[in-house]
Image (cartoon, rainbow, N blue to C red; front, side, top):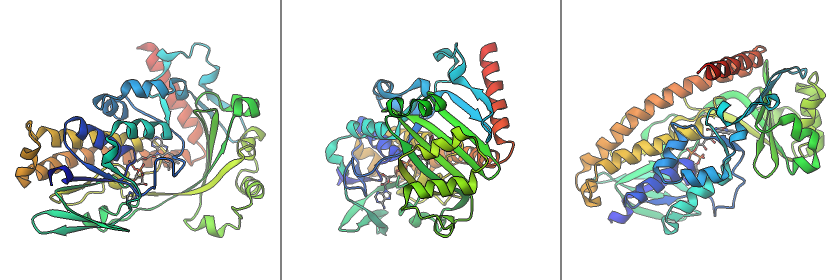
Length: 402
Ligand SMILES: Cc1cc2nc3c(=O)[nH]c(=O)nc-3n(C[C@H](O)[C@H](O)[C@H](O)COP(=O)(O)OP(=O)(O)OC[C@H]3O[C@@H](n4cnc5c(N)ncnc54)[C@H](O)[C@@H]3O)c2cc1C
């Protein structure tokens, strides 16, 4: 039983970081993932890992060197333009923009980060094609997991790392994510340096942002010479279905999107959408209430997006998920006192570990949910670009003084 006592639902960055940290300390756990295998889904764009969150978790997990092999420090460079193409800030143009000017938040492709984490956990501990339907509380503070095709019984601790639409969350509260007001259409262009050098140069080494009232275009260089573009609009939740754009018609849909929402933008900005030959995936962005909490439940907790889903407008989601994993692992490991059996011998150990973890997670989650909400308001305003450029300029000046 001890080897099956901890169940982690979801093999995203949060769940995998937790599994790695527990296994490093000889705490056995099983990870249940809905996807069929590691290749099933394109895992999405690029993520920046912060020194005190994502990078700290990787360091504790013994994976920082592996991360550095694939991370892109130059991906931190920002470029900010107005809708008419006026450049407000461009770190690609700064000749002296070397590593010392960067803020140690290197980018890494999401797929790459997941591979590093997947390769670090015991292969036999991951169960693919296990889509959780519900968690059942049974006598003696134990839990049974009901999957689409089976039931696994008798867990002492269930960690919901199952993202935005967490099924584990349902056992803790009735809260569900609500629409943030923003929908993003994701596109990408491959092999840009060869196939489209102008697009490649326009975006630069990192991220290019255009923020404006009710709309934004964000383009980010990913690894493998790919540029991912997000055309974002503030529209009702039903917009994807009701706007009249036929999303199955790639070229016509891109043109309609531009004509309706970005008509007065510069030609360079329009080309970011027009020249992206893949993707066109609408993503309706949801969030949990800021400061979302639940009553501590012995043997069940959440981490990452399952606990504090927010929009990507402060770029912190993955960092929070990994910091959560680190905190929860530390609380569990510190109650093990050298023996796995010690952790599970007294139910109070698990409950107090969860309570201590949730306290720090709530504080961190609320702080960044607030910041993200402010980011969303600012980005989708007419002054958003200028404000962001000014903020970066001040930070850069402060770094230079320091
Ligand atoms: C467009 C976009 C851009 C973003 N950019 C950034 C950024 O630049 N920086 C940043 O820090 N964050 C960013 N984020 C947020 C970041 O991707 C998330 O916060 C992060 O992935 C959360 O990690 P997680 O492990 O909690 O959840 P997830 O990554 O969502 O992983 C959850 C896992 O659980 C599995 N799962 C789900 N349901 C079940 C089930 N019922 N049974 C079993 N398994 C299940 C899923 O398949 C998945 O593998 C962005 C998000 C979006 C949408």
